[in-house]
Length: 299
Image (cartoon, rainbow, N blue to C red; front, side, top):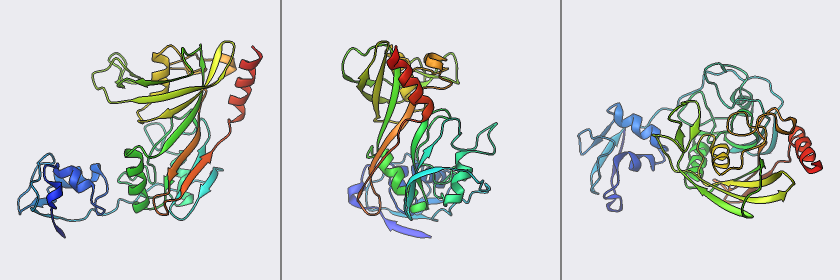
């Protein structure tokens, strides 16, 4: 059992947010679970997760036990451009689902990453995963190798201290060399499988872009995520009249002979959560996207 006194500086803070900030808890999801299951007492009494602290209270809780994955490692030829004892950066190929989901119980990136000691997080089906890429989006992802590494990386992502840059080939010409799309995204009102701006569940979404190369009928954009909503880049660019070439859902399927969206996570930059050194990893365009770009240039 852990007992601690709430500092005066935490007065006014929600109980779940305060718990999530503690190293023993590490995430909002775990904090909410502890409160929901009645494992947290404030001055001897249970409280709701949204209860406001006053400072000076005594909190008691049982530290959560790490949830172990029951997934079996699978041999997989993965490109790992950076790794150390705490984390690794993997270059995910297109067509590979990140974690198990209905219809994808085997052969996911997570199954392959288990052989690289991926670990951490409160979801046993997603050990080490702190952010994800769509199945047909290629490129860089950072993965944790321990519970503490996962907590620290998750905090970096949450605080927007991880720079994620993508290359996207769009159909059309942007009105300016650079721009920002600030528009909430959620499940589409008419199709729950799609995300859109027409939604009853809007969540903040901010995307920055600049023109890398302007072509006759296309533009190669360098895109930076400020938030990380599902399908964010694809939805945002389509919404401003710049659909991604090859995108079968939000853009131009089959454009330039593409069998998937021209979207590649090309660069990942962050301060290492243990050493504070800068990690800056880059990934070149894979052959199918390079071929499509050459075709666009010839036009």
